[in-house]
Structures are given as structure tokens and as C-alpha cells.
Length: 357
Image (cartoon, rainbow, N blue to C red; front, side, top):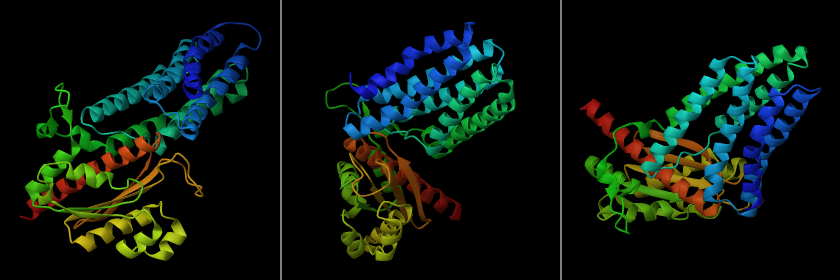
């Protein structure tokens, strides 16, 4: 077991100790519990950073880390409810949100899509851990009671807000799932999902065409699209614009824009999408730019930061992602998200045509 995974496991091991410290009665037990809670909370940030820096991101770690976070916070909150330090409904709200996101991730996985972490999710975690710390300390230090109440209110707000944010960003997962996307696995086992085949169906049905502009994914989006038989009917072409020079020359991205906001930015992603759509004359286009890792080189932006933009007759839109895997995983997730955004845009175009008919 590597160091990042060991840190994650340490949070699970600490749960019964923390619960006991809150329940026991001896001088300073609450202070010790709060101190340990803070120490083990810090491992939540440390394990992910170490895994990315050392290139030791594993499937086990990606599964265990969010699970450990949820159990770590909820277990202590349950004890605090028993001690009368927090209302039970607060725990119900937090648990319901975590259950909802877990179900959403499961649905996404069943459709071959990755539900990436969102900035609000990280804020939610910080507010929850801050609230738990203050709830523990309010017993020996009554002066902290109003601060604990404010922290709990903030935690509830961010918990609900991040949950709604996830539902809105990935609402397309909750719609009808086209079974034509299923194909038999190479091993002859259970069918596997193919977002690219669904994209082909949607584009074909609407008589739409698509082009791609890729930087960090290096052609993965185009490869996934053209893996589908008959993709020549809707896939026109693409540009792998890895360098700024190619972005300027082939996609007409402004040198001033690149110098001002950098290649990995929402503005450049949108310029790339608009440029490649204009270059190939397609119905819609997608552009991907990001920092795949393992290092950020000279950039101060974090590894995993990715911007994906869509250009169509409906306009240009973009989304920010912060993937937490290794280089291969980050690129794969970006390509998968790009396909999902193309599907959503193609469906929006189809709906707009129906309304105008």
C-alpha cells in the first residue's frame, strides 16, 4: 500500500477513536478529539496531492478516498447528535446529499461517463469539517456556540448547494438512456457502454456534423468518435493544437488572449471551439485544453484543470473541470466529458429545430 492510500486508511482507523473521545469523560477529552479531527482532516488534502505528484493514483485510492471522507465526517456527527450538540436533521441533510451523489456517480459509471469533482464539493467538505471541529469545542468553550451555529448553517448551505450543482451539471444522466449505445464487451461478457455510439446516433438523426480541436487530449476525442463504424457521415476532421503557435495559426486564437489568460483557460477553449467550427464549417465543434499532468511545468494552475468548450448554431459555451487522476486518467475523463457535452448540445439543437418547425 502506497503512502497516499495509507493516509486515506488512517482516516478510517481514526473513526472509532474519535467517536470514543467525544463520548468519554476525562479532562480535555473534547480538546484532544478536536485536535485529532483536524489532523486527520488534513490528510484528505495531503493524500490527493501526494498521489498526483508521485504518479501513484490508483483505482483503490479513487474508490476509498471519497468513502473515507463521508464516513469520517458522518460518524463523528452521529455521535454529536447523541450528545445533543447538533440537530439530527443536519446529519440527515448531509447523508442524503452524499447518497444522492453516490447514486449519480453509479448511474454515470453504468453509462461509461465520469462524474468529476466540483469546486463546490471541496468547499462543502471544508465547511463540514470546520463545523464538526467547532461543534466539538463548543462544549468546553461555550463562547464558541454562536460560531458553531454559523459554521453548521454554512455547511448545510454548501451541502445543499453542491448537491444541486451536481444535479444540474449532470442532469443529462437522469434522462432516458438509449440502449443502442450498448455493445458486447470484447471478452464476450456483459455489454459495455459507448458514449461515442450515442453521439453518432444523435448526430446522424439530426443530420449534424462535428469537428474537434484538442490540446491536452491529443486526439483522443477524435479517435473515440472515429472508432464508430459510419462516423465519416458526421465527423469532418480536427486539429491537434498542442502548441500556442498551432492554436494561433490553425484556429485563429488571438496571441494577446494566449498571453493574457494562458492556453489553459475558458476563453482559449471557447476561441478554439469557434475557430475549428469556422475552419471546417460544421454544425458543432468541441475544444479541449487542460493540464493532464503529472506536473504543471511552468504553469501555476493545478494539474487536472481542464476547459471544454462547445460551439454550435446556439452559440459557444464552456465548462471547467478539475480531474484528480493521473495523466492517462485525466485525459480519458476529459475526452469522455467532451463526448457528453457534444451529445447534450446535439440534443439541444434537435429540440430547437422541433420548436421552430
